[in-house]
Structures are given as C-alpha cells and as structure tokens.
Image (tube, rainbow over all chains, first blue to last red; front, side, top):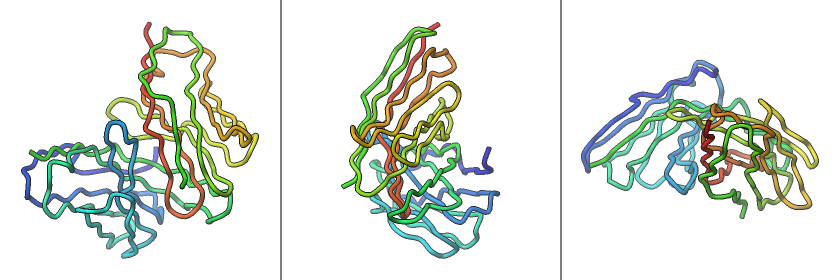
Length: 119
Length: 111
C-alpha cells in the first residue's frame, strides 16, 4: 500500500470556524490532490499540487485553500467552514499525471479519508 | 466536455452470481480508463485500467475492455463473493492533472 496518511480522520466543527486537514505521504510522489466525496457526485477535485509551492484549483475550489511547503505534506484549509462543506475528504498522490494528448496513465493512490461534519 | 456515466446502484447479487456494472464515457483525444474500488471506511484503490482501445484490464477476477466504438468500459466478474461488496468507480484520464470519476455504483453481495 502507498504510504499516505490523513489527519484528523474525523472532525466535527461549527460553522464559521477554520479547519485544516493534513495529508502526508512517504512515497516522494510529485503530484498531490484533494477531493471531496458526496453521495451522487463521485469524487470532485478541490485543488491539486504539481510540486512544492505549486498548486492550482480544481472544479470545486471555492471556500478552500491549500499549501504545500514540503514534498510530503499537502494541507487543505477551510477558512470559514460552512455546512455545505460537510463531506468526506480524500487526499491522493500520483507519480506522473501523464502527458496532455498522450495515453497518460495517472494511477492515483488514495489516503483513508477524513470525515468532516460542519454543524 | 469529458464525462463518465455509470449505472446507478445499489446492485444486489447473490454469491457466485455474474456481475456487470456499466460505464460509458465522453472524451476527446485518447483517454485512459480505470475502475477503482472503495471498501467500507477506506479510500479508493485501483482495481484495473486500460490505456488504449481494445485493451482488457483485469485483476482479482474482474475484467473490463476498452471499447472505443461504443465508448464503454463495463466491469464484469463471473462469480462474485461477499468480500466484493464495495463501491465501484469508473474513471477516465485524458492528460494533465484531472481524472474524472463517475458517481460510483454500490454493490451488495449476499451469502
């Protein structure tokens, strides 16, 4: 199994409070991703990183920010949590996303998830 | 745009039954196709993949064939077990940084 941990695994917080989720990998993979999983939506990409201090937005980035100061750590922050951000959050890593326009293989390896409840 | 559509669940089968979970896609270029599985309380893990047309991915008795003419990648298994109970996600990748996941299909297998 790929070495990916997420912390905390469960969190309950109140609307308006800041929350930071941590993803830690021991695989030295360059690419890291944050997804949220909601019933009927599959996984939706929040943000991703293609290197230390290199990040970009995914399809559902509003209300979230990320930081990556080291290869092994990727932090997801909810600056002011809302009830709509109640979800299960997954971190993923990949060694290479493949080449645009090419066959690309981009196998992603997922962490165990963080269940966040915003009251 | 690129998208993945998979059959809605839940799918409930008896042990040793034949499984098919349908997946169709819309994509430009030459996507790679994947099936991921999520067991209760865990993250997703790769089940199988195919990177070009007519390729067959296989793993743990599961198979899926990349059909470009029908834009499909249906997951099959000849004889399911209780331990196969999970949520199955079809996904596609066309390059860059974005893998597109289907909504997931939950499978229940009864003893």
